[in-house]
Each structure stands twice: as C-alpha cells, then as structure tokens.
Image 1 (cartoon, one colour):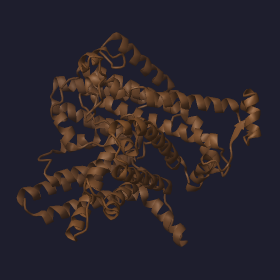
Image 2 (cartoon, helix red, strand yellow; image 1 turned 120 degrees about the vertical axis):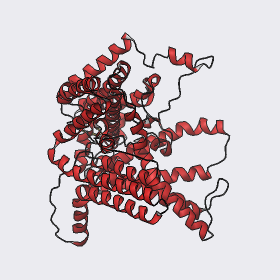
Image 3 (tube, helix red, strand yellow; image 1 turned 90 degrees about the vertical axis):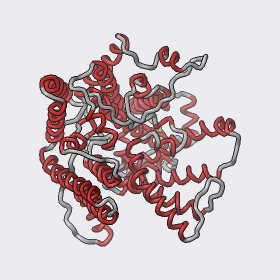
Image 4 (tube, helix red, strand yellow; image 1 turned 180 degrees about the horizontal axis):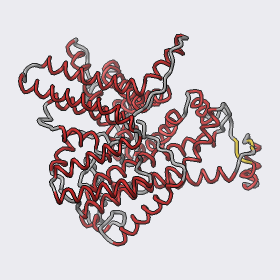
Length: 550
C-alpha cells in the first residue's frame, strides 16, 4: 500500500487514526502504541505478505543481537573486544541480508559477464523499503554498542522499526531521536498536530500526484529512445534529463512531506529529509539538502570513521594530515578524496543494484572531491566579492552537474545513459520538430541554415514538456518548500529555515506577517484543502513511485 492511493487515504488512515484515539482514551498510551504497531505491520504486509515473512526473522535477529550487546555491556563494560565482535556480527548479518535480496542477481550477472559463466539468475522478492529498514537496524546496533541507548523493550523496538510513516521511503531515523517522542506521545489526537499533519500531507500528495506524475510522461520518451540506440539531439537530451530531475525531486520530496505529515498526526516529528536541494550553490550544499538523513547516516557511520582511522594511521607513520592552513596533495587524496569516493560508491550501490547507480554515485563522489579541492585551494577573495561572483555561478554549475548525473540514475542500462549523455554534449546535433521551426518563422529558417535539423516529432509534445519543466523548475527554485511554509509549527526535527526578516530586523514580526508562512486560519485551511483535493483527484492516473524499493 502506498500513501498516494485511495485505499490508504480513505480506509487505512482513518481507521488507524480513530482506533489510536479511541484506544488511547479508553485504555492507555501503551495500548495505543500497540494498536499503532499492529496497523503498521498490517500496512507493510498488505503490499506483499511474503515481504513481512522475510523481514520478521531479520527484525527478531537484530532485537536479539541488541539485547546481547546490552547485557554484555552491563556485565563487562571493559570488554571492548567482545562487544565489538557482537556488533560486527550484527552489521555483517544486515549487510548479507540486504545483499542477498537486493544484490544477488546483480552480482551473479556481473560474474557471468566477466567470466563467461552461466550462474542462473532466480527472481527474488525484494521486501518493501529494505534498504531504509536495514540502515536503521545497523544504526540501532551501533548506538547500543556506543551506550547511547540504555534500555529498550520489544514494544519500543517494534514501533521504531515498523512505524508506518517512515517505513517505505524514510526518512532514516535514529532510536535516540524517536523514542523520547513515543514515550511522551499523547493518548489522544491533538487538533494542532492533526491540522499541521494534514497540511504537510496535502502538500506532499500534490507534489507527488500532480507535479511528479504530471511531468513523468514527458521524461520517459527521451530515455526510451536512448535505450533503443536512437540518436537524441541536444535540446531533447537536456529536456528529458531536466524532466526526470524534476520528476524525482517532486516524487521523493513529496513522499517525504507525506511521511512527516502522517507522523505529525500522532504528535511525532520525523527529521527533515529535503530542504530545497535544487537551490544549492555547490555539490556539498546539495548533499546537505538532498536526502538529508541518508547523508547523515553515511557521514556518521561510514565517512567519519574512515577518515578518523586513516588520520590516526598517517599520524602514527609520520605522514602529514589535513590542517586549516596547510594541506598537501597526498593528505587530501588520502583523507578527503578516498573516503569521499568510497562513501559515494556505497551511496550509489544503496540506491540500486545496477552499474548505472554505481556510476551515479562515483560521479557525485568526483563532484564532491572537486568541490572540496576548490574549497581547500581556491583564491582567498574577500567574502562579499566571492559570494557575489560565485553564488550564481555555483548554482548554475551545480544544477547542470546534478541534471547530467540524473541520466545515470534514470537510465536502465549504461549504454542508454551514454547514448543520452552523448546527445546532451551535442554530438548528435540539434533537432527540433518541423512544426516548431515553422512557427519560429525567419528565426526557424536561420536555425536550419546553421545546422538545426527538422524532424517529424510532435511539436505539441515538446512544447508541453518544456512548459512543464519551466513551471516545475520555477517552483523548485523560487518558491519556499513545504517545511519553510510550515516553519511556524516546527514541522520536522533538525530543520532550520532562515525566517523572513522585516525592514526593522524583527524576525518575529516578519514571521507573523509573511504571506508565505502558514497560519491556523480559514484561508490556509482552504488552500491546503484544495491541494488535498487536487492530489486526490489525480490518483486515477498512472503513477510511478521511484523510491519504493530503496
């Protein structure tokens, strides 16, 4: 079951909310949480009951390992080796579990291609949200090992793992930030939380069902043509790549908004996962805004430990390390380039079992290395001059780099990605529909004289794709995002948006008067109601959810 479905909106969600409120009023907070766990398990199992059968043993093993870690730490706090072994077993188990269901066929196919072997590829059920759930369980074990989680019960662990708003597409949450909220959760629904939650859900549903699904048909034809080996011209290549970039942005950010809104209905704040990443002026800034919780996880559990270990190793052998004043090329390569490349390789592999995802991750790793190198050795200009010159230039470079990399994310094969990128670089020339060139009049003739080729494709389709792309690009880069609109109500954990500033510098006054910051009023209620209506009425069209198996 997906959030953008009639069954979820008109059956599952109302029943879950009413049951939670009634049980909380009549029984206890613990009983209400038990109801919420039962509904969450049902939500997961309704998609494919076999997925639940696959995930249940894994969850049981992780709970047992966490208990073992906890008891070992209580009995022998100084036994570093013993608890480290238990943790290693837990991490290895989760990685092997994820690898079997998500990467087994990819690995066997790669071996067959490399060595000419004939290992059979057997279809395997891919449990819903397996990557998100696996990362959360790994983070849970690491936090138990570090002593940041002192106590937990089976009920605590189940609500942490199965809480349905973050079950399919994240955000990736930590036990220590969620369980205090569940411990203090109200026994009944609160009107303010319901209003805020429904508002966020309405914005997310509109993003997904209207914007993302609306532009999706305009991205597919260009990628399909490239997959079939057909040449794709310069304009069509960039239009297709831009359309998909906007599709996945509104798809994933919309689903994240829905998740945050659904959790807020119960008084729970999930961490922010998107903060207008297409407004970023550098790749480093982009990854601080895009899929924030994945970046946080990879930084905390992969990048930082790797850098610390390499730094200690270099210091022990007398080699230079990075400092604020001096940075040798060798230190930069060892302590920035290598950990960044390795982390982004894992990011690409996490997103999908395919060579295109790996290449996408490695390309973003290269982007980040270049960005870090620029920050290390760039000219030391005055801050005001640097911001004035580099912010718009950085935005253009970052946006172009992100759109180009998205070709690898979307393409089904590496050959298809190369074919489309080949066209985006201009090697296939520039083609425009004949009808478009005719409408351009004298300018159209001038374009033909300078190498533009007329084709028989639909000019109407191209214009509709261009209008969709322009409209969504303006929304993504010029309009406040959902969390900024709801900033008055603290919509998410770890979200900080610069509040509007009045002419007198009084932020509180500007916040109250800003027309783009939501308030508890009939006007805003009507607006969110229209968004919810528009999103709901759009559910009858073909919908592609891009992140459901990540």
